[in-house]
Image (cartoon, rainbow, N blue to C red; front, top):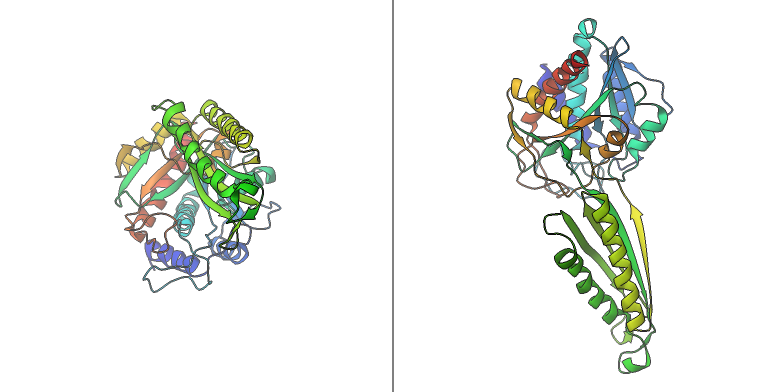
Length: 373
């Protein structure tokens, strides 16, 4: 079996048996078995899920990272290797990322004697809930690492396309919950209460003015209310309504400006409607900021191995890889996967032709990065 066939076979097995964040027990076992069968050494970190493999010897260390978790989505893709785990799907392509780095590990193992240092490959759990990177860092996975590289498949790019950028790339991610506390009343006598639904609906509209009228139009920012919940029958004004949504930015000062204005607007509405509004923020990963020199280096290597390279646009999605880049220089890149349906869609179906070339690319990138140190 060729390397390409092997990696596709592994990818399809991973795809059939996806697991959610922090539940990647059998996924971890599969990856461990495949790596150990190829003679690779697993580092003895105390991890419940996920693992780290290291290749080579010496003081210099370069790291590569793949994420291994899936999403709570029922698969709709028309493929023979559909998910066998009901309600769980690799709808973000982490099975692709894992297969790519498995291939890189095999290629680097074959050249281990020639490597001018060590290459550490992180198979990270829990990217989707933004906790896995911190877990691996606490375990020691970044100790001694001079630079780290990672990837995400990009369904909007064709196979053979490569994109990255220096500086800010993926967005800061915040989740917010707004709890509107009014006063319940009979729907026929609304004057006896404080209408939480009316207040919540006006608050949704007012929050959109933050992006359109209070943030510089040249600064990237998205504020979206994605859930509104209140009431349980047709003829009663509910006491409480809850809103939920997300804030995405690329700059900390913009993030803090928006968060402050959301709280101010909520307080103003609460006073005007004689109600109470609580705003709760839940922090996700910070903005992913690539090291300029390593983004340029990654692009040069991509061009050398035959990718069509471009400068990536700013991405409003979040990415746990940002946590590594807060501590270690490096770069995150996009590899074209040419899926008709996008990330997190039930019919997402990336082109497997990207796997073998990407594995070769990351093996080459890691070795050249060691030489560059």
